[in-house]
Length: 481
Ligand code: NAD
Image 1 (cartoon, helix red, strand yellow):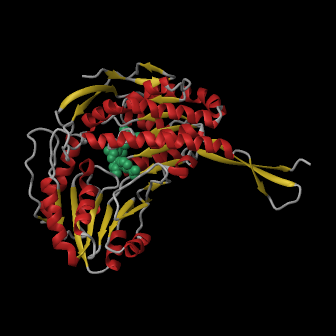
Image 2 (cartoon, helix red, strand yellow):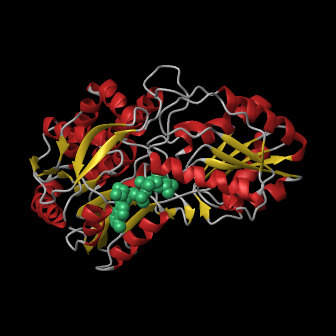
Image 3 (cartoon, helix red, strand yellow):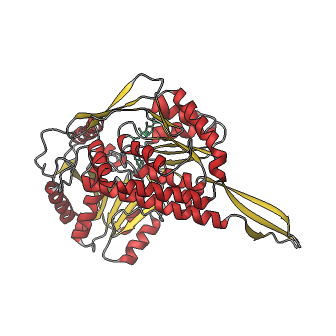
């Protein structure tokens, strides 16, 4: 068992005032992997003070030099790739290959924002026309200040990279709170930032839960910017906290994303994209395409193909090569999904998915496709966060689009079609921040990520991800003769 993880403030490990410890559990072996402190508001106070002290120095550091530190962080992650992937797989339950993919995505993200930092340095003081003779304006970008960053458990190292890399590139100092459910992979960042030569107070990590750390952090007046990824109820609480002091807030929240399949789609491609969209990470994805909307002419064949593919998944020890379905992250997530399965039974929903032989231990849920689910069903409308797919058949693209958009969320969508122009026409009308046509759910660092409607506010990744941590300043003055 790993040791107790406390607070990393000012480049040192500090003992929390809280004496409550939270056990970190391996969801396959159902054994403890370590412990973290629950955290205490006094930890937030100390971390915010450290970040405030470090801010003037870090914001004055040339952006290209900040970028060099990000390159060093990427290198630190790369050196530990295999160890961290195993740890992530054990803590989260995701198959090892998925954890490796997470590490690669995180490394790419730090490298991308290293380049973005260098480019930011180059564009400072850009001269702009003001339409008045003898006058010119000069544009500068400054860090927002101290950023409070809060992440969930489903994509360890990735959700944090999407916030830490742009925040540090922008010149913000940070107080980062990983999820208390899967905090272990991110602990390595503390050692990595030391190796990378980040000055004390630039990066602070607070372990703990929502009460011990999350709420006090989002309410702390010394935090200038909040960036939160997680559930909608907590996102709303963070947004309310941000209202005090009129502080900017970025929110990456839930989803109930559609996958639209037209009748001319390639059946194998459609099946594979449907399966990846609901079974990757055991369906614990904000962007899970959990509503299948398929043309009636393909529906029965696709339903059968998806059922077969679900039954062929290989559940088991996520650390074993070849395993394609890991356990859910913990028993409470398993119970939550099982409640939806019980609800499906109560609603009389129809499923023909065979149950694959499940391991005798671990928080597993067997994947399920429910056919022709009424739109009034709780399962059709609510985010389940497990390998549970609801399907409906439609007779036209028009009907598919309106069904897809009849949803409170707007995070992502997939379109599968034999005709790319048709796919594009559908994609253009879907209310979602990301739409993939005949493609896997890619989220490269140069792209953007975020949702419409209740899926959130703002965008991560790409240039927009950097802007989220910057303030723009314009200085107008006479042009020197
Ligand atoms: P959660 O909202 O329960 O927790 C997220 C984080 O918030 C954790 O670190 C938690 O400790 C912290 N927290 C809890 N209470 C808090 C409070 N009062 N104030 C501040 N912080 C608090 O979410 P989760 O269960 O960890 O993750 C699952 C949810 O995250 C799903 O709804 C999923 O859709 C969403 N998610 C969204 C995205 C996206 O990019 N849109 C990505 C991943 C996950």
